[in-house]
Image (cartoon, rainbow, N blue to C red):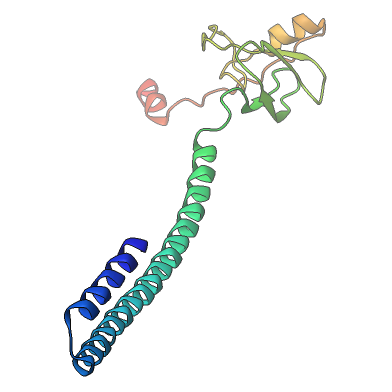
Length: 177
């Protein structure tokens, strides 16, 4: 800005030095000052309008930032729901001893046993998914493991109820002939 001021002062000196008639000199200097003020007014208006526009852009940017923050929070919530802590899993377990169903958090695959909250027996967890073949008929594995369980607990196993099948009437009719 000082360079502009210095240049303005130099032009004014040149005008005063080169115009000999005092009336003309006064007239030219006055008109030059009017012209300078018009330029200054235009510059002031442009600066004002630019400041207003910058404020509008800043306000819009703030609103966008607020929206982005809300969206980021929602995405973080969804992400945490989808990718829960990999070191903690929630499992539904049915106790093979008392058939009590319960939910437990397992910290990692190094846990190999869980205690049943009902009967307090330890339940062995099989992380490899290797299912032992069972030759019985129980509700948990589709086999009757009650005999093995009874043997482990040292009690008498319950006798399973075996339903008799009724012979077909068609087969009966053939035998009658």
